[in-house]
Image (cartoon, rainbow, N blue to C red; front, side):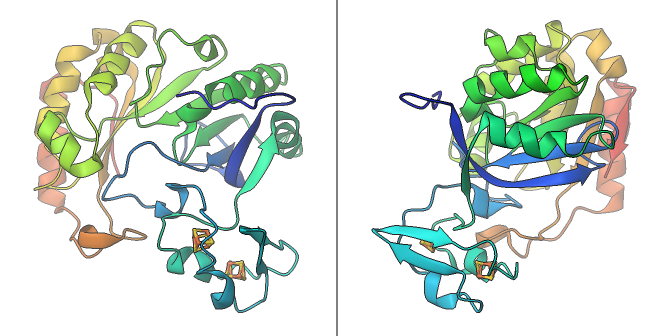
Length: 286
Ligand code: SF4
Ligand code: SF4
């Protein structure tokens, strides 16, 4: 599962780095979005981060700024010419982007360092950041030397509890996308036994920064997810870890859920009530 370079410095495909975010962990943070995911959520809001570019060239002629060209079967993106219209992303049939950059730990670190003293930490996301654990281990170790906290925003399908990266990771923001295996598989194309194991281990290790449930009635068994989490995590996690109940929104979503309506306020209030009844104390509906 780990992707490492055969030799030389570790590299990873980076979709983009946002200098500042206030919604991906506590305080002001820099967030790094890695390219490529190991599952395919039907409600994904960043579908262009799911796959690696296969160099098909479909986006090249669509670019209004001439910022794309094909060379030896690879698409080349000219950052200077790009006007950021995102046409290439919308026309890509492969859930990818031509604007992905292979970066070393040094290069990502230097971009982060520029944002000091305005940030309190970093968050890594995706795509799926846990496909890059050796890279993250090195990046986090360096960032912690700058007194930055390091969080991972994960889908939970990669086992984390025994990984050395956890020694330098301050916490995981774990998506629990569905509880019933069939429901999870219909939504993502994968199974969820590892997600449940991560949930249990990370709770015991006190490494759960945030638990996230995207709520979409008919697709996500949100009441079962809340019950399942309540039965799996420690009492301390229920008291302290933020449980974020996220109302599904269709912005950016492709395919059959592109026009699915958001759940009602009444439905979200019911879920919040259930979570409180089961002992969660730090709940946010967004
Ligand atoms: S975002 Fe994509 S399509 Fe738009 S200018 Fe940049 S490379 Fe071209
Ligand atoms: S970004 Fe998508 S459309 Fe463009 S070359 Fe890569 S796979 Fe093809």
